[in-house]
Structure formats: C-alpha cells, structure tokens
Length: 278
Length: 303
Ligand SMILES: Nc1ncnc2c1ncn2[C@@H]1O[C@H](COP(=O)(O)OP(=O)(O)OP(=O)(O)O)[C@@H](O)[C@H]1O
Ligand SMILES: [Mg+2]
Image 1 (tube, helix red, strand yellow):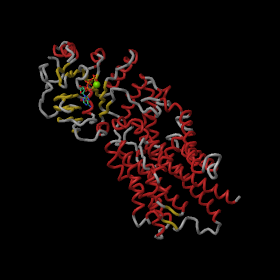
Image 2 (cartoon, chains in turn orange, brown):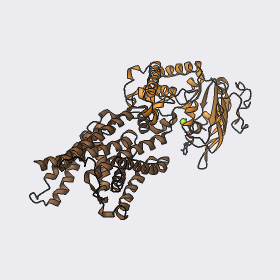
Image 3 (tube, protein in one colour):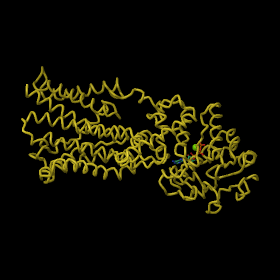
Image 4 (cartoon, chains in turn blue, brown):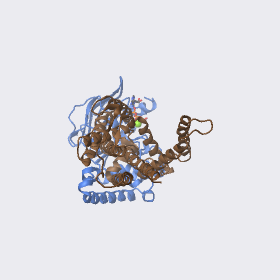
C-alpha cells in the first residue's frame, strides 16, 4: 500500500489497525484510536485505528460480518466500546451518552432506513433541528413568541431541504407511506437538519436503483463541496471507487488495508479477504 | 324526573372525569409510547391527597394542586429507574405499584383503611342551591377543568416538545441519533400524564364525596385503556368519544340487569353484560382497529 494520503499512516498493507499510538493526528476531524468491541469472547472490532480529515470522503469496506456496522455503533455511542477512544473535533466521545455526537456535529444513518412512520415528511425533518427552544416546556409557557419565531425558521430550513431532495410532492405525507428510495432521501435530509460537520452513512446505496444511486452520489459530492465530511460504509464498489478519497478495509474486526481507491483495488490482502470469504 | 336528571348529571360527570383521566394516559401512551398499566394508582394518589388535605382544612385548590404534584412525584420515582432500563419495565413497575398502593391504602390508619375517607368539604358547597343543582354545577366545573387540560395538551402535542414525544414513540433510537436526550422527555410525559390523572383523582374524591381503596381497583386502568383504544390512540377527541361510548354501553346495559330476565338471575345478567360489552369492543376492533377517530392508514404504515 503506497498511495496513502496521510503521511503518518502505516506504509504496509498488513494489519495497520494494531495500536499505533493514542494521540489523535493533528487536524483530524474524527479519530478512532485502538477501538475494540467484544461480544462475549468474540471480537467484532479488534483494535481499529484511523483518522478522517475535514472535507474527506472515506469509505469503510469489508466482507459481511467484518465489523463495520459494529464500529459505527461504537463511534456513534450506540454500543459501549470494550476499549479504545473515539475523538471528534477534539472531544473524546467514549463513555458519553448517545445523543452527544449529533449535538457536536457528528450524525449517523442506519443500515436499514428508519423513518418516523406516523409523522409527516416535514415533521420528520423539523424534529431533527438542533437547539429548539420549543422543545422545553418552560419556553412554551414563558416565551411562546420566541418558540413561534424559531419554529418558523426551522420550517423554512426543512422546506429548503425538502426542495433540495425533491421531496416536495410528499412533504405532508406520512413518512411511513414513502417508497424505499424516498425514505433514503428523507433520512439523509433529516440527518442534515442537525447541521452536522460529518456524516456516518451505513450502506446508503443498499437497495437503491441505479438512477437514485446517481442522485445520492450527486448529493454526497455536492455536500462535500460545501464542506461536509463523510465516513461511508458501502458494498457497492463502483460507488466507493468513484467518490472516496480514501478507503479503509476491514476484515475480521481489523483493518487490513488503507489507501486511495486505486491502491486498495490492487491490494493483495483485500483481494484475498473478498475472494477467500474471510 | 328530577331523579333521572340527577342520574344523568352523575353519568356525565363520570364521563368527563374519565375523559380527563384518559387524556393523561393518552399523553403517555398515545403520544410517547410509554406503557403505563397502573394509571389508576395516580388517580388514587390524587384522590387520597385531596381527601386527606381537605379533611385537614386545606384550601380546595391547594389540595388539588398538591394531589397533582404527589401523583407526578410518584410517577417520577417509578419512571426514573425503569425508563433507564427498558420500556417494558415501566409496564411491570406501574402495574405492581398500583396493586401495592391499593393494598397499602387498605391497611394503614391515616387513610382509614377499608373504611375510607368521607365528609370532607367539596367545591361550590357555599352556593345556596339544592343538591341536584350542585351536581350540575359540579359537572360544569369538571367539564371546564377538562376543557382547559384538553386545550393545554393539544397545544403541547402540536409544539416542538410534542414532536419529540411522537418521534420517541415512532423510533427512539433515531431520536437519540439525531441528538435528543429522550429520557428526560419520557419522564416529563409520564409525570404530566400522572399529574392529569391526579387531577382526575381529586375530582373523583369530590364527586363521590367518600373514597375507599375499593374505588381504585386495577379494572379502572383497563377501562381507561379500553376507552383510549376505542376512541383512537393518540387523539384527545378519542378520549371524549371513547368515554361517552364506553359508559353509554355500560349504563344502557345496566338497565337490563336490575331484575331477572327469563332463566337468568341478576348476577348472571351482570356477568352477561360484561360479556356483551366485550363483544361490542371486539367487533369494533375487528371493523375499526384504529379506533373510532384513528386513521386507517396509521395501522398500515411500516418503519
Ligand atoms: N449484538 C451482537 N451480539 C453478538 N454479535 C454481534 C452483535 N452485533 C454484531 N455481531 C457480530 O459481529 C460481527 C460484525 O458484525 P457487523 O454487523 O459489524 O458486520 P458488518 O461489517 O457491518 O457486516 P455487513 O456488511 O453484513 O453489514 C458479526 O460476526 C456479527 O455476527
Ligand atoms: Mg453492516
């Protein structure tokens, strides 16, 4: 593995996931440090370290069961890490409640799309807006005007995203009535409502038709142009190769390779992991 | 005639108080998805707090507010540990609490045990009117209180706060992933719902003018659930409609159980009546599973 964009990254393709120090690299947006997650005795994530830098699109790939989703669960604090640390924009996350990452600007989506079925598309979006005064009872009672004004602002932002994602026609429909593709778009739009700096996407292209796939790719690229950072789990190699600046490859809970798309595609360990059915 | 009218006032008061009681349950389950199988406990806490305080000459308004606060406090003490674990624990904890509370009320002296408490002052008693007239005035008071709570809950449900409750009901993991601290919302919804039940309890105490532990059996919780499901979960108007229909059925059928019919004794008729109500509810659930005011589409939606 030669063409790594990070000067500090290990130069060999063999298991660079082993602990390579605990200090996050300077300038990293997300820093994963020697994270382990055991289920009973089984190491689903077995000492994983890597960084994601501002403005990057990093792909996380690997065979089924490699531990990618589990790593996402740990990063997003939905599962407690057995050991290791995750630092987002200088703030250590491990051990904090799971609502914290989104508040800091790190938002995730789920491998299987999850929408609030009995809420309208617009409600789904408005819910996700951060720091809403109207979410606190005392403000509803004492500052109804401030609540109303902020709510109008939130509604405007939601309308913008509805337009951006072409959901205008269904904006007042229950999200449970949307098609699979529309749900994908809604989930992405809803994540954006939190005003994130970085998005963790778990298989955004799963079950998506080719046209929508191109559309999603455009959205991801466009958002990156506007400064968004991405860490994307994906099995769709075409998509990964086309949009990722860098790819991290996992198998059996460890990182087996890391580098730009070209070098990863040619990496022996990666080819073996996929063909050998790790 | 006047007796019939008085009876009618009593019927309506019952409907109104149950409506209030169910609005509290609906805030917890219909909006937030919290399963409270011990709602009657908060009714009992409100009723006993009011009865005891008013017996000791506390002002009525103050006693009612205290009843709401104590009910909310108890719900908080139950919910705080239970909601941190798993949602179904709340169901277990509340149902257990309601039973323990009733048995406890039956066995301690400051509540007069099974004899209960009576003879305390009631609202509007200073008005120089007949007892029948008082019943109608008290009905108006209950209706006014319920209307205010109804409007307040509607306002909250439509606010960003209510939106968080609905999101928790739909998928709490997603709500968390989007940055909301859901435990505090669940506790608030639980406590508000319990306070509303406590208010209904205070009104119950004044309505009966005499309360004992027997008034707070577990069946009352399940009547409240029935009314909520009947009217339409998550709809405040559903609570009103459900209460009218449930007690309508209950009252109409009671006409037929006052004297033996054919081969049936009054006891058997009383049992048959429960069966009849059950059958009507089952039919309703078959043909309108979403409740009377619910939207059919709501049931077909998947996540
Ligand atoms: N809660 C759990 N308890 C026990 N084992 C688990 C749990 N969650 C995941 N695992 C195991 O951990 C391993 C990694 O699973 P994970 O879902 O992270 O894989 P993945 O890389 O996301 O795979 P896929 O590409 O199929 O989504 C699997 O062997 C899985 O069975
Ligand atoms: Mg996965």
